[in-house]
Image 1 (cartoon, helix red, strand yellow):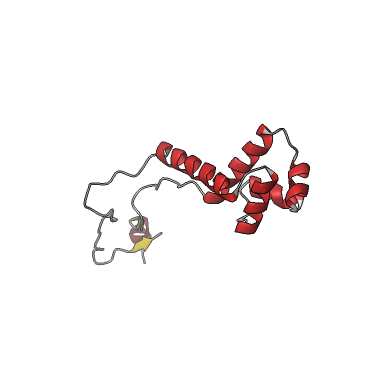
Image 2: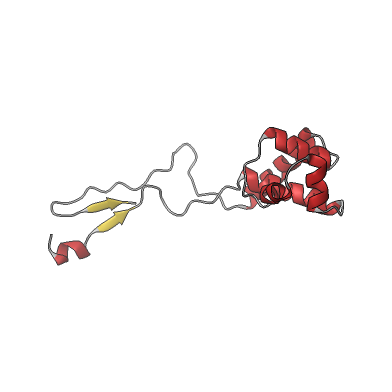
Length: 129
């Protein structure tokens, strides 16, 4: 392929535009756990011991670095004086709040968002990214 043809190559994205990032469940749950712990003025060590979870693991859960099991979440919630349902309800409210503040991609009602169609001309190379 000539250098002239290479300079004309275009990248056509598979997804249109930058998508709004959805909040991750693990980040939301971790934030709620940390907020509850700090509101009670308790240390990470204290809550981890009560929950029978290692302190480094609980720290990673609070920072959204781990996807904790339901057993771990229930233990952490109990250590904070919450039922698992309370922790999930608080997390759900936070998730809804965060989702509403994230800009949603523009979409017309009744249409699915699709990438723009492009048919390569003879001699043209298209790359999908």
